[in-house]
Every structure is written in structure tokens, then in C-alpha cells.
Length: 236
Length: 382
Image (cartoon, rainbow over all chains, first blue to last red):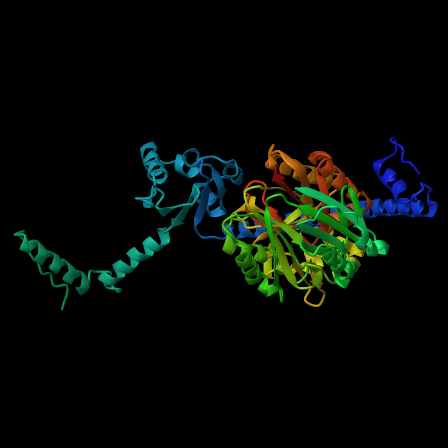
């Protein structure tokens, strides 16, 4: 049988295959070929539907896993004792943990806005109550950290002592950590005082006397004069 | 150069003796269904008829003659060269781990200063195709012009055969080397598959065996996507090829196809290496996208051949069995597309394979490909 030009190319091929050498049409063979073509199309459609469905499921699982991972990461950041803020290669804030927000009195919303460091510190309610020159000095110290000066210790007017450290990130951006060392500095001072004073009377002890005498000896070596006054507190 | 093609269906293989050929060919390609090649009777008869020619062929589930496809029988392509020297060499391939050294040994036999390129056929199972090509390149250099493919067995994946001078060999590689300055070779390759779904990580593999993706058995993923069609594994696995790439070189992604599955180990063995740590994504295709891919391969080959004046041109068409499985009765459309793009004067002959070998369109470095159409245009300057 001769294939017609207006027929689908697949049907033309099926007609050719179902035709004998003399052009006679084998109807059973033609029906078999047509039926198989329908089956192939059905299988292809079902395969595509199934793949789409599974792909959607997998992507949903991936999104859920990603959200869970992000929540865990945030929880870990928020439970750090140090403040942490990460800035991208354009100097914009990518993430700031809860401690960072607490130290500077910044709201979560402000930290999520993608600001750069200097404006963030400038609007910090904690810093705004400082004397302007002192505030500018602290902000400048922090903002200007670089590879040569990658950390700074700051004493704030409210009595806090902070260490701000900067780490540069490969590919751009930097990570600042802010540690409140007020307590450790205070404890160190307290330990130093205890070491040099009597626990009962809180008067200077021999250790402090020896330190002062050694200091006087050093001064005497530079021809500095000194005097010693001995006062006996024993009232017997 | 001249080319003549003959197709004999399974019932008429005895007609080899009566083939009407007036000229004496230098080279004969033969592609046939697995039983025909494995029995060796028809290829031996052909060798007896043309004993001076080099005979190279392989088994396949579908052979390509012009724009027609046949699932059985024998396709015979006779080629006569005017001034091009050719040589046929072969090498045993005992097991998959010998792929690289077998390739290197074959290349040593075929190497010569005036080697222009080679057409390689390999067993389709028990071979690491990428290691095989790398073995050849280790001797002939990275820019060696290599094309060809891995023998096929349709959707059965049971046995594949190479036919060398009339004899069937189950585990072997063989190649025709083309020598001299007259021979013209050009290639085109394209897939037409699209990636889909999440990016996965190859977390456990060994050579060409993929054990785990994202710490889960690789075979489980395929079974999940195939549903009822999983009973047709490994063949049905070809409906979802795997694109893999090294994260450090995302532009050099390659497509891998399944050769076998191990239900106990829940692993799949692919036609080439699948390194641990690489990324992977499933792929799928539509009839339209695969046909368009074939057209692009032909257009690239035509452009690569340039406007060299030739008397006759043969297109060796090697396409993946996965495309045949997906397109079913519409598979001929991809051959039609190739024929349209090449022009009716080009004689097309080839087979559906378990892996294709050809130079990349851009880098021109040869490699193993899967799920592609690869075309080798062969001619001789007039």
C-alpha cells in the first residue's frame, strides 16, 4: 500500500512495514504496530508523570532538610557566648547571632536588613548613649580592623571590656567575633589584688612589698633616689 | 572512495554468495543481530567472498541502513579506497579491569606516523569504555582521533560480540586504522537529554560500579523512579541516564548509562568510570529533544567536514540503545533528522550501541559517551 503524504510520518512507516512486496496490506500487522505505538506513548506519559511526582517529592524533602539544617545552624549560632557577625564581599551583613544583637542592643530585624557595619554600630542604642567622641573612637577602632590589626580590646564607659576580632574569608567578606571579657578582666584584677594583700586586713603583704622594693632597686640603678619609711603596726 | 550497502534479513543470510558486487572492497563493516554475529556463519561467508578486505563488525539490537532500522539480520557496508591505507588490529579483553591495558596494547599495534584516525569497536559488556579510550590515548596522545562504539544486544544485555574477519569474538576490542593524507574524517555528537531533580553526590563507587548516591543504594533510586518498569532493568535504566561531573570542573559533565545491575549489592555498573565525590543528576528525554540532538550532531559533523570535495561519503551512525528504548517506533525520526542534515548523498550505516566513542564537539578530545548519537563521516579527497 502506498503511504499518503498527508499522513503522520509514523503511520506512513507503519503502513510501509505492514505492506508486502506487491503492496498488499497486512491489516493484523498494521494494527499491531499502531497498538504498540499507543502503548509506547502511554508508557512515556506515565513515566513522565511518575518522574515529575517523585522529583517534586524529592525537592520538597530537600527543602525541608535544608530548612531543618538552617534552624540547627541558627540555634548553634544563637547559643554561642560570643557575638558573631558575618559580612559578604560587599561589606553587607549576612548573619548576626543573638549575642551580637544583645551586645549592641540591635533588633533581629535590623540585623536581617543587610546593612554594613558602620551604620549598624552608629544606630546601636548601647553606643548612642555614649559621649559622641568616645562612640566615634570605638566605632572607628572596630570598622578599621585589618589584616595587620585583626583584633582590638575596647573598654566601654558602662564598665564592659570587649575584644573584637576579625577573620578574613577566602573569596571575600569577613567574620567578626565580639567577646565580652568584663568578668574575666575583673576576676584577673581580683586575683592580682588577693595575691598582694592580706586576706584578713586587706593590707599590702610581703609579696607586694618585695615587688615595690625590686622596683626601687631598678629605679636606683637609674640614679633615682628613694626613701623607706618603716611603720610598725604591732600595738603591743 | 566508493561505498555499497546491503541488508539481508535473518531468513536471507544465505544470499551473501549472490551479492552483486563488481568491485573489490578494502574494508567491510558488518552489523547484525546478536545471534547472526555470534553464530559466525554469515560473517564467515562474507569473509570467504571478500578475503582481501578487512572485516570489522559487531552485534546490536538494532541496525541502521539509510533511514531504515532493522532489529534483525545483517547489514554489510563495503568500502573501497583509492589511496588510503587501512589496517585492522584486535586485542583480547579478558575482563573489565583489563580495559586500559587492552586499549594501550591495541594502540601500539595501530600506531604509525601517518595514522589519521581509527574506528574502534569493543565488546559491549564487561568493559570500562572510558578506561579503554584512555588506554589508547596513553599511546596515541590525547588528541588522537578515535570514534566507534560498544557492541550491543538490544534490551537483553546478555552477550555482545565483535566480528573480526568473519570470526565472532565475545571479549575483544578491534579497530580499523586509517592512514595517509587522503582520508577525511569528521565527527558529530549530541544527546538531547535534560537533567532533572536534585543534585546528588556519589558517596560510594568502585571503578564503573556505582554503589551509593547520597549514602543510599544507587539501585534503589532507579527502582523508585522506574516503578513497574524496574522489572526491565538494566535496559529500562537507560530511560534515566545519569549526568556526572566533578564539582571543580562543572563544564566537563559526562553522561553515563547502565550496563548491569546487582540486586544483592543494590548497585549499578555503568559504561564508564564514576568517581567518588562527583555530583550526579538524573536525566530524561523526549522524542522531540532526542531527534533534535541527532540533528545537531549531524550539523556539527557536516560543518567539521568542511567543503572538501569528495566522491562518496559514508556516515557511520552509532546511537545509544537507550534512545531506541525511549523512542520506540519513532526512533527512525532521529535517523531521518541526521539524513536531512547531512544530505541524501551521504550513505548512512550503523548500529545501536552500549556506548559511543567520538571526539567532543568543542575540545576534540575523544571519550566514551552514553545516550548520544555519534556520527563519523568518512570519505577520501577526490
